[in-house]
Length: 255
Length: 359
Image 1: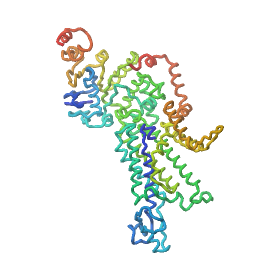
Image 2: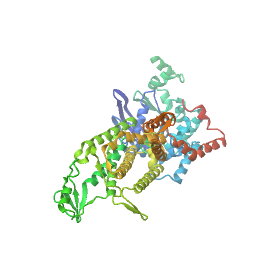
Image 3: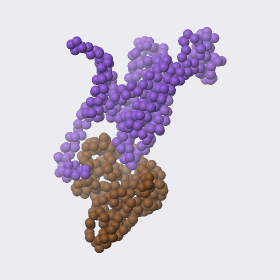
């Protein structure tokens, strides 16, 4: 079973304490939303988990293996894949080549028929198959996001962190991404989704983590989080008027 | 390759050419095989022969026999035949030394990007040049060091005898080396290795997040290209038979980088073709011509034209002049494919490309 165990992570950038004793666990194919206002430390947390940034203290174990001191490529091979907030496709490589990179990095195979078939399957599921030989830079922003998701499928990790998968995406493309997330989750992969789009998060996730100025202030079901006064004060209440519940108003007054 | 595939500009490869050249030069200059011990030189038994290391004497008059080997030869008075080290061994050594230094420099410059990398390698090249100039005792400094020709005893190919100064055999040696290097680069660009190197040019962080060991591949690229440069330097040195520290001048490397830029850095075949064309053009442009009374001295002006072409290329064709042509022939089917698939199907997913996309 997939098991990610994050314990007492701390990260400081100079005097800026970005992650404060963050601890949580992921067990099995969970679908988790990670929310919080801008600057809450969501992306920093992703970067620490991914190995791009080393934490000042704390540990991360993935399936029993300590990964917090490993370089990103080792973390990727250990089974943690992530996307980036700003899409990062290999622009001057073809769509197929984009997919080959993680597959070849993972296994010591060569570019051959089998690999191509696997890549084409992924492209079909993402409705990108007709673009297979185009350079990635010829794709639209939304298509590039799909391509990035496709690369993750080729990497075949146990746990996937999606950083803002819905930002700037057309509603129709959004459905493709929804579909992707549900399908990949059904295949038994754990997912952590970072997003500011509450509707999507509430629709997809059964558990929410809320970060606020580096503190993990809530770890609960979406309904519980929605009614959590600390969260409302920190996030929901201060950013947008959502449902007008009693607590919401109370929090508003408390401010 | 370094510049194009990996997106890293290095002016230091001239230094590696110099390293290769000087390695083989010193190797052929100081090491000899003698059947008899000289008794005065540093020497090691090597089977039934002796490996003799000549003592460095710096720049002196050639009429004086001051180094230990020359003194020994005088003593023997022609009774003992001393042989030089084989040229090919020197060239191989030069290539290896280039690779070793490539590894060291590669490790050092790993974290540097773009302009900093170019500056660092520029610095390395200058340090090397200064060192060679200063070590007069060993390298003979600005006086330069002489090397045996590629085929010191001439060579007979298909019944035709070429003397050691003939230009045809070295030409073919270099030509085949070029083909060899291009073949290696082609193979690399088609393989896993090439794919990873291009991925790390495009986006290092994304490549790393997808499991590519970026550090290893960056160093490998540096080592391979350094070895190629060193090989080229060593062979060229044996061709011109004398090298001076000025061979390491930055101007040379900028010319090479410029050639690659004009022709197209991303495609090494384009770069090679471009380099050949540009070299030809530069030589052709040496011919002066007259317009009315005005004599245009092209030997002076050709580099100005060259510079203009370079600037225009950088402004209007960032990928160089040749790749668009190559793409026209090799990738024409791609767009057609895309269009066909799009029109053959309901535009159910094409919509976001125009309406949503970025935000």
